[in-house]
Amino acid sequence: MARPRSFSEKDVLEQAMYQFWREGFGGTSIADLEKSTGLSRVSLYNAFGDKDALFLLALEMYRDRAEAFFTNPDFASQGLESIKSLFESLCT
Image (cartoon, one colour):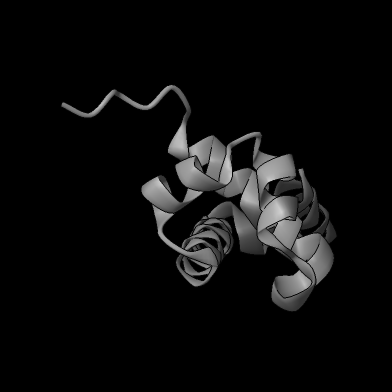
């Protein structure tokens, strides 16, 4: 029987997303992902598959966040503040 995961997939994906954002896909190694997520190579592979699969999941998370922001009815009414809020939400 498999053990339950002791980490949040969402948190790990978020850290992977930031790592890919900082260094790009080609500039990010599995060792970089281990360091940024706090997971071992085996745990990353078991949870997410290979680096390509993890990148696609991280990219999907980024897209979902951006989409949620832009479809928020308050976006258009807030002007410059909404743009500032977008970058703050995507960078933190």
